[in-house]
Structures are given as C-alpha cells and as structure tokens.
Image (cartoon, rainbow, N blue to C red):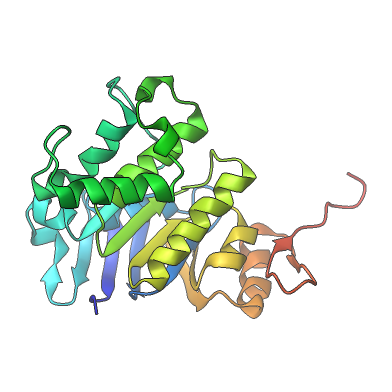
Amino acid sequence: MADDLIIEALRVEAQAPPLIANISARFAPGLLTAIVGPNGAGKSTLLRAMAGVVPTQGTIRMGAADLTALRPAERARRLAYLPQVHELAWDISVADMVALGRFAYGAAPGRLSAEDKAAVDRAMAATGCIDLAHRGVTSLSGGEAALACLARVLAAETPVLLVDEPVGALDPANQYRVMECLAALAADGRTVVAVLHDLSLVAQFADTVLWMASGRLAAQTPATHDAFAQHVPALFARTPVFASDGSSALYFRRSQGT
C-alpha cells in the first residue's frame, strides 16, 4: 500500500498577504480528494505548491520521504501534476506528447520500452485520445488538448496524481469520462487530488473535500450531503439542492427576480 501524502504548514508568499498560509492536510491512497473554493481562494496555488513548481515553506512528504528533497526525476516517479493551463508550443504528434509522460523513467518519443508503450496506450485509451494519436498537438481544439495533456500525466502511472481543473474545457460526456477515470484510479489505490469548480461532479465522484477560502483551509471533510449543506453556503452564498434520484448530483436554484 502506498504512503499517505502529507502536507504540513504549507505557505506560499508572492506578496502580502500570502497566497496560501498554514495549510495542513493528509491525502490517503484509494481516495479522490477535491479542492473546492471560490475564485482566488488559493486552490491552484496549493496544488502547485504540492507539485513543487513554486517556492514553498512547509513540509510535503510521503511516509518518511521529504518530496522537496528528492531529485526531480525521482519526484516525478512519485507524483504527476496537470496544470490548469496547457501550453502546446511544439507541433509534435499527440502520441509523442503523451510519451513525454514516461520521461522520468528514461523514455522519450521513439525510444519506448514495451512497458512504456503499454503505459502510453493505457493513458490514451482512458482519455479517449487513441483517434488523435497522429494529430499534431497545435491542431487540437481546447477540449482535445485538455484530454491529450491529461493522457500525458496519466502515462507516468505515479502513486500520486494532482490535476488542476481537468474538466474545465470539456463537453459533458468527456467531463464524466475524465471523472470516471480519476475515480477508477483512486479505487485502484492511487492518491488523486483534483481542483474542481463543478460541485455536482464533486458531490458525485469525490470521497473527501478540502474547502478553501482566502488562501486558507476552511475544513477537510468527507463528501457528504451534510458537508455540502454546511460549507457551500458559507463559501459561495448559495444553497445546494441535491437531486432526488439518489445520484448525489446537485444544483442551484436561480435567484428570484433574475
């Protein structure tokens, strides 16, 4: 069984006040954790801090291993990160871009072992990218690019997966494809942490939720109806309504007179 991912007193200072301050949490293998909060709450900054791509104060560890002390390649074999913005500057094929997810294992496009190729194929199948394999990445639509970038991250097959708004550019069918994929990875024993804005998807797929506001952690709770009823009005000034069909889907009623 993989170790928990643990963060302690994380703080990112780019200005005053800090972007995030004194955030401590534990992320267990086998669970999909959603990070939720209003715009500007610090969700993406927290994920970037956990991924090691911004200067950070505090502790990030898996078991006894301090992730901040690992060499980049060793860290990349433990933790994969999908940023919110996808920059596709090189016009390589989708298949070659996804293969870059195996870089930490010594692989590269055109130099894949059988294990590497199998990981790439699994990632492209999971994200529905097989038909895009020979397309140039700069020819992709926004949604296609989002799926291809997610496939690159999945190809690393790391114990921990950090994804920032993985469904933001996707149509409803692909939103559910991606969320079902992330839930399946968690059920298979991975630690999956996702920044999400669609609270209905959070309610249907997340196991736990980090509720954030103003750069701080308001609470970490199971993804229960009671937790949504308590924290959604406090963070978003809206009252969630759960569907009556048992699906855990939720929605908001429009304000009267609008």
